Length: 321
Ligand code: MTE
Image 1 (spheres, protein in one colour):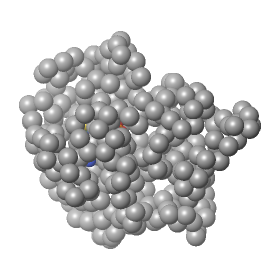
Image 2: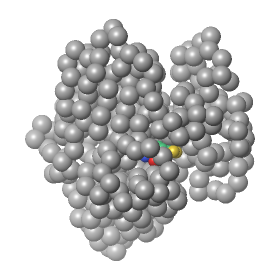
Image 3: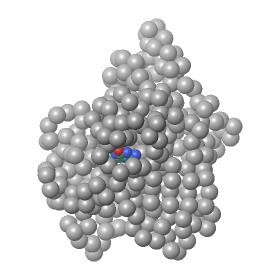
């Protein structure tokens, strides 16, 4: 069922965060927020509404999506201050500090390659292609930290079907925005930019693969990949490419950033697998942020095995790591 979204609401029309944060602060001061405390918001955000000092905006009409975990949602502050986004620095705290002025509007994503109907989608179009769903996914980084995030978006397959992939399309190649002027720390990234990623077509078309435009009910903060990113919950976090500008349907397996950088440590598939250690550390356990200890057992396919294991029937997952 397709819910109708307001046809004339533009990406730039949604209430600016500063405005509604100001409103929330005012209500907070008046002692009126109790009843307004949004489900899933962390105590930190309710106690101190200013913890999120970045410019994102409320997304309207977000519905509850499928596949959400009922695990405890990670405090938003932990999610938005501990990031990998090498274009803005290699320390976990760098993206939050250095991406504030990143221009994400206007924005468009070009979809090309082995498709019957190549086209460019503006951000407004992307926001209106389908009802926006909240999906609370586990997100497990190869460096062994994990978070639980209420992402907002819809299945990537919704967009893919519109461009009509041809029978020769076997993989999907993704590319991030790259602008050395806006990302001066790129010199120290130590990886080839623009950041590129890829999925097999059947992985990309799996309903869990999320085209993600927001988190915690709002547009994505810059450090988390504004304005649109992928979120692939059964794979290590580096497959979840941020600030997407190009999607290309291709015949052959595309190059991927971390595999180019160090093929011995980072494979193409990168499915979360507690039985295949990283050459330098165990993948059997993880640190659930904002904690410190690697004491949470990691699950095969990050706990999404029931949905995705069949994609890899007959494959040796030690070889295809
Ligand atoms: N996308 C781009 N463009 N640049 C990056 O450096 N880092 C990847 C991935 N997407 C990265 C990227 C890695 S290594 C991880 S673990 C996740 O983003 C981190 O996502 P998060 O910061 O939202 O947790």
